Image (cartoon, rainbow, N blue to C red; front, side, top):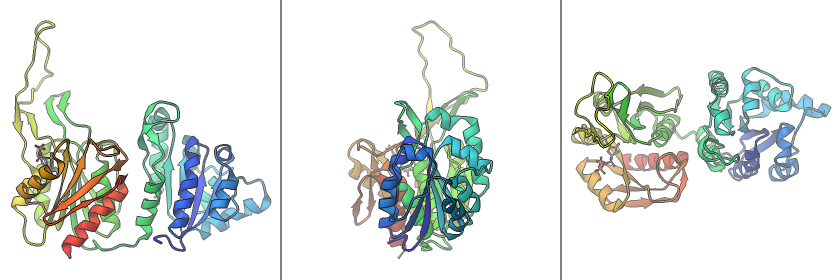
Length: 400
Ligand code: CTP
């Protein structure tokens, strides 16, 4: 009952993803919360207020038509411990960014004194549009918290960024806010995340598909649990914000190495979630490399090894410091992960097998095993937010 007696307003707006709101209500209620659902008129076309009032055991306010409904907005704004807008459409994002309040959702939003989370859902081009991105940034500048969209199949049939985060993930975000776990208070945590880009010439690089999500989730979860977090982030579209989080942006493995080795002596716990390029081009051309011969010409690239950040930190590890690595394997996962655990002097290694459904790059979910010297803990497929919690639970256990 992680949300016991928490009063949560769930505002639902008119997206096809609104059907998932039923699962959000059920999850919040199961976690012990009191849930008041409000909806825009458009949302009622996608999911019935009757479904939501039955699940939440409260009347649903779906418009500002009734006088009672309308008067409720200030009261509701003061009543709530949290407001969650899920799904939020591009249209409602635009309205809230500009303070429009001609409906119940806008009026309650302006009246709410509690923290606000918003989970967008829309088609990929609507999500990518600069107007939408500017509206998201505006809400964040008001102190509201984004629950980022997931990548995947969209209702339009297109595939890309724009899916509503999974209900389980949305609930985990609220749980970790209200959980008041401060078991990492006073700890200095270093996290690497994202890919690295290794330049070839001024316009080309060698990179990989890492989105940075897993490491960012670990960094955010550690900050919520009271740690001072240094996140060293390779090129990523993610922009995590938390008062206890400092983000250093880097491009290449060597830049990441320089920041990490500098911070390591003052670090208690390091989590190496970045997908660091093992090799970089031996030389970086100053000018763009031009093609030379005809269609049958070939081109080879000489690569040299990058420093191994995790292994370097492992070699310099003092008593009391914890070092957690990741292993992404396509075969012989546990054996390879165990070898890396020993070779890099890690205290735990998080193994993801990219052959498993629901695991790996770009997915909102992951399926991992956490291997320590004496144990292998296996977990089911779950949202990366929940995986981050499992990793930090193991860290806390190892510290004890
Ligand atoms: N890592 C690192 N610096 C590198 C390479 C990897 O810090 N130059 C870290 C990763 O962040 C991860 C762990 O080491 O925590 C394992 O990375 P992985 O790429 O799976 O293993 P490698 O040791 O590079 O082995 P291989 O690519 O041969 O599987």
